[in-house]
Amino acid sequence: MQVCVIGTGYVGLVTGACLAHIGHDVICIDNNAEKVKILQAGQSPIYEPGLTEILREAIQAQKIQFSSDLEAGIEHGEILFIAVGTPALPTGETDTRYIEAVARGIGENLKSGYKVVVNKSTVPIGSGDWVRMLILDGINEKRPELVDQSGAIKDESLLSFDVISNPEFLREGSAVFDTFNPDRIVLGGSSQRAVGLMKELYTPIVERKYAENQTLPPVPVLVTDLSSAEMIKYAANAFLATKISFINEVANICDRVGADVVQVAQGIGLDSRIGSKFLQAGLGWGGSCFPKDVSALVHTADDYKYEAELLKSVVAVNKRQRYIVVEKLQQVLKILKGKTIGLLGLTFKPDTDDLRDAPALNLIEELNRLGAKVKAYDPLVSQSGLRSGLSNVIVETDPLQLADGCDALVLVTDWQQFLELDYSKIAENMANPVIVDGRNFLDRQALETLGFRYVGVGH
Ligand code: UDX
Image 1 (cartoon, helix red, strand yellow):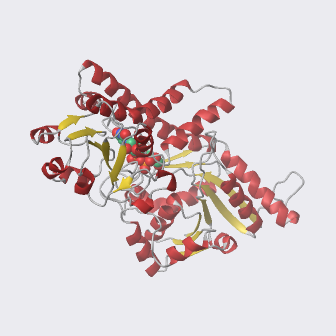
Image 2 (cartoon, rainbow, N blue to C red):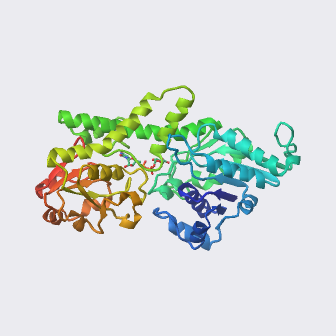
Image 3 (cartoon, helix red, strand yellow):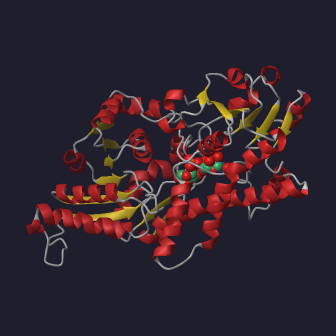
């Protein structure tokens, strides 16, 4: 099928590349000409395992092209994905100006035929109808003769479109895998024609042709109304964030009563009603989705005069959790002023170079405020990769160098390779072999045998 993806950020690029990989004819549009050039050369501006490979393959097979020409993109696609950014405003509300510009742009460039416009970005609940209105405004602006007095299209046999909400549930670091192995596909909208075309688009994925396990039953496709599909995305992220904040609260209680949250999580996770995933206590959640989406849902509730007390607490628990490591350092080292603290990991989670809302950033700020010297090592972040406000951290290029002269190490990100470090050499390099394991990730016994003082979170 002919597909146009507008916006080549995280979601747009992965969606475009994966749809091209399964045989569709894709054009990706971005108004950033520099980025388009990089993509045309077969390079990915983001780090995502497997993405560069499928991107290059698709370029070679002429299944994907990149351009800044919105008009040409709209002409090309029978399915138009809106995948532009929806960042959070300082108030927690969603900044929808990019969606607005693209929706109007679609309307201004629609000429004839039938198009399915798909909201792939995480958009505030109610955006489907709003996008529809903006597209009609755009048509009215450029071709008023096609629209009647009420703003509706006069002759739908010449030009028509439907809006579908199709939220994504991709995790950074496994976005390509998640696209080919989804738990479900959600399609929100009332037009049978649009839903039918979307089902056709996803058939190879639904039939698991590109899945790791091709013997599994087909991927469930859930068809809902527009608002429910939009809500599913927020509710899923809010639920996962709640699960993490919940286990972090339990961990803090474990710390006080002498229980081990790792064993507790195992014990409750075996209850099939609870499930074992997202029960890893530690420094809490960060990244580009959970913080933004939970706050946006709280805000939407506020707009409709409902105080989302539970979700507000989920956010508050997560904020506090980031500083618990500092308290632990103070308990062991007492005064932090003049001490050197080494952070193992900076990114908000492993297998990504993403620092958005990463707990490490709050840690650095707080440790600096308390007068400690902060060093860090991350497999994917260099000194130049840090934003300028973070000049008070020295980014080392290897873990042994990081350990040099440190009074304590803090494991911030659970990178697999941190399990395999030479901790006896690390201990030798440190002024004081203390390790605060902010993800309950390392082998406590092995570290204690090497002479480390090990501190976990509720563990
Ligand atoms: C999340 C959702 O999982 C995904 O479905 C949605 O589309 C986007 O948001 P992502 O932000 O990539 O994906 O990361 P995820 O793997 O979900 O982790 C989010 C945060 O929670 C990370 O900071 C991670 O360290 C933390 N986390 C996760 C925990 O602290 N404990 C856990 O048990 C799981």
